[in-house]
Length: 303
Figure 1: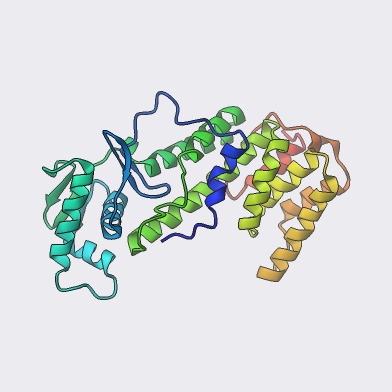
Figure 2: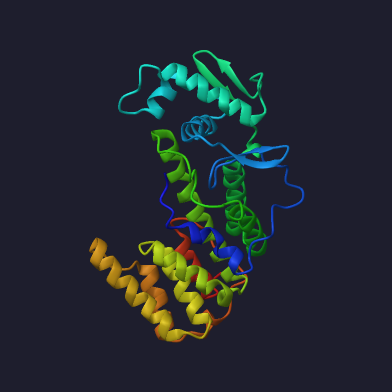
């Protein structure tokens, strides 16, 4: 099962008053949740699957939604080392139990399809897909210069998280890979959300969130840049400079590297106490590998 050391980060936006109370009213209801413990919506609300192997079966099928997953693949996923002789019959039992939880005794959603099983689901049915789509929309809005819209869309994406992805699912090759992918997307979305909020002038409220993220992800230089700027704008110039020194030490100790040119440029701007860093730019910056340099240009008001 997934490491829960980042669990508090899922609630950082809520605790700091950023996240809405729930999805926007025009969002269709979800059917499956995997951004946290795996759950299925029923007439009575969200319910978990009591058996670990059933959760693993459902998770593998969700990761491969709308594709036939062979019984042999399920066997290899559930028992990667040595499967019991009764593996096929056990899988049939697990599928039967999953159908009961889904309220799908006739197998219309989770159907038997040679050589295995097929779970049908729209993208709006699964919180992982909805998160991915919203995060992409938010990052496009940020790249297009609409920081306010980007911040709102990215908040809607991040509030879907209730804990580490697939938190209560036993590790399988497929689910472990999907959990890692989703966690990487979440961190990128969090960085983009922070960038959008910084542009909107929310540095004071953001600082505790960024500090928490940096503590868990000390090698993410983009987070360090965000922290340095947020601290400087909050009137904590000495702390911003110390944040750079800590980045320098960490990169040297862990990787034998120096901070990037963008980080050193921001450090020099803070040393010079450049007043342009005090106010947010009206222009958004692109996310991704060029985010730091574009962000520095925006902070300096470059065209």
